[in-house]
Each structure stands twice: as C-alpha cells, then as structure tokens.
Image (tube, rainbow, N blue to C red; front, side, top):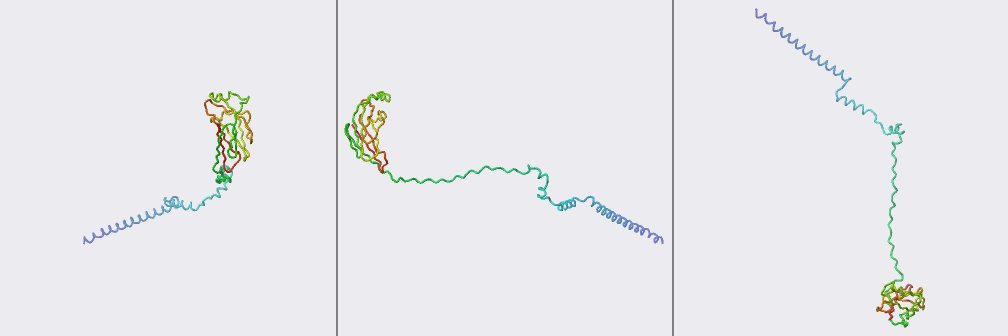
Length: 238
C-alpha cells in the first residue's frame, strides 16, 4: 500500500518539466518575432549597403541627363566671348612649280661644212692671189707721228720698227678683214689711223721688231658675211 502512494511525485515533476519546455519555446518564438518586426521598422531609416546601392542606381537612372543643347542655352556660356576659339590663319600655300619643257634645239638651215683653207705665199712687193682674195705688202716709210718709244715700252728688246703698206682686194665677198703678224708678235703693231678694210684700200702699219728675229710676215683674212662653208685665207710673205 505504501508503494502505491509514492508514484504521483514523478508524474508531477514530468508535468512541470513539460510546462517549462513550452514556456522556453514560446519565449524563443516571441524573441524571433520581435527581432523581425524591428528589422522591418529600421528598413525605412537605413538599409543595408546592397539595398542602398540598388536604391541609388534606380534614382540616378530615373534622372534625365543634361544635353549639349541645354548647356548652349546657359547665359554664362553665351555671355563669355572668350569661350569661342579664334580660328587660326593658315599661311597661303606656296605655288606649285610647273614643269618646264626643254626647248628643242634649232637646226641651222645652213649647216656649216668642212672649212676651206686657202694658202698662198710670196714676197714683198708682189700681188699674191689666193683664190677669191689677193694681198700685196710693200715696205713704206715710218709716219712722222710714230712714237719710237712704243716698242721699247712694250718690251726693251724691241728696238727696231718697220713700216708696211698692205693692200687687199677681192672679187666675191661684200666685206673682208685681215690680221697682220710679223715674227708672231701682233700686239706691237701700230697704225696712225684706224684700219680701213675697204676693197682695194691701202693701210700703213708699223710693226716692232727684235734684232735677229724672223721678219716673215703672215696675214690671215676671210669674209665677214655668213657662208655655207667657212672660208679661211692665209698668206706667208718673206
């Protein structure tokens, strides 16, 4: 009988333990609900970084972007003239050189052929005919106006002087001239008057001479007019 009275004590302890478990469970649920409600209330005041970034992106996407047209209407931009760049002045372009054409050589309608050389020789006092031209050289008196110091001033060795009368005639040419040499020294020749190269005209010429040198006279002549073939004349007179 005594053993049957002791059994209600363990049962009472089991009931109390179950109630405690229920209370702890309800307290946990209440705590979770309370924290959840606080999280929802704080979302309006501040949001996590991820949600704030999403909110900023949405707000920036919704705002219109200013265009260049709005900037050009700004009174500050239009009022300041220095904002407009001054155009640079470019130097004028150099003219492009034009290619020049090399002129073609002009062909002479009257080409010169091989020159004709006419040679003749003779003595003083003779009329020497040489093809179309004849020459005569005679000894003559030295003109009174001649300066004998002319020869020595040119060269102290030229102490002698000889005078000659030269006459030239021709039958074909309109104008002819001649050059006188004696001893290959034509630069010491002298004439009282300007030489007259007229047809048949005589001229007196004084030639300086060095004693012992050659007295051979050489006269070169030729026409002054153009000829198809050059004509050169030469006389050797001793």
